[in-house]
Length: 384
Image (cartoon, rainbow, N blue to C red; front, top):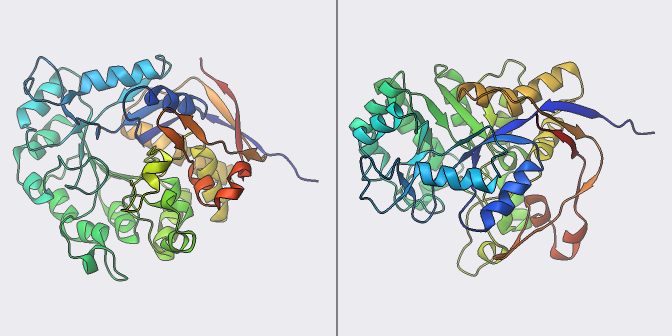
């Protein structure tokens, strides 16, 4: 007889997510409410990007979305049911120190996002990391306490250096640039986003406490072998999934009872099916909306951690619910949700743009996608 395990957790915050724009945002928000979120960090790589803070402040003439407008659109999509929505400012060639200072002084800016040029979806407005390191924007971030969310991959690499058995774009970034950044700006608050390699884990673990990292469920569950074996475009994301030793380093970091640096940020990236299956490449990003806590639970247990034991539960709760909100100084939620160890079917999200395929569904053959199940489900979400 199987014993049903039921875990009661505080509402959690996804501190790296994509909600796009337009009517689809409401559908994506509903999936987040169904999985017990109370706060989100909505990434700014929209079209146009979120490249200015205010509409009536510094840079008001720029043809970008403002942080305040995009934040309002996300809050409305969630029917104002979240305690907090964080929208980082997209760092472009037009970003100035004065813009950072004004945003901080008016309380409208909490974070900024660095994208390597052409490194992922809608990142063509990014600037080189070498240019950013030597700009007064970085000093302004350090002085104001604004958090730098950083996509840590070096761009413009030769193909054999971009993804090789000995190195890749992320390893190069953490070897060549992160030491310089943390040395030059020792008090700068940095979130190393969606890390994928042992090199990144080691760097963050050994850095001061103002340097932390998000880790996605896809990078905890899968390796490059899974991508090659299944040939599933739904596992194509930036940075790519890596090797088994890299995944093991990520897993050991999150299940460590003493973990205080690594936390949940799904990089949930919804793309319609046709965008993920084309004859000239595919859109980068995995869709895990509605099922992220379940996938994280699967990763913990596949790493040998029983999350229903006191020690396992503590490690899981810290990773999913505690560390990230503490770093961002978010309000504590009053509500809870239950994570129950029972089989649950994963549904394809139907949108006006077409089907959006959840990652576990996209990992099986099309004829099997109608009945994909996970070993965990969410129930009894309470919002006080």
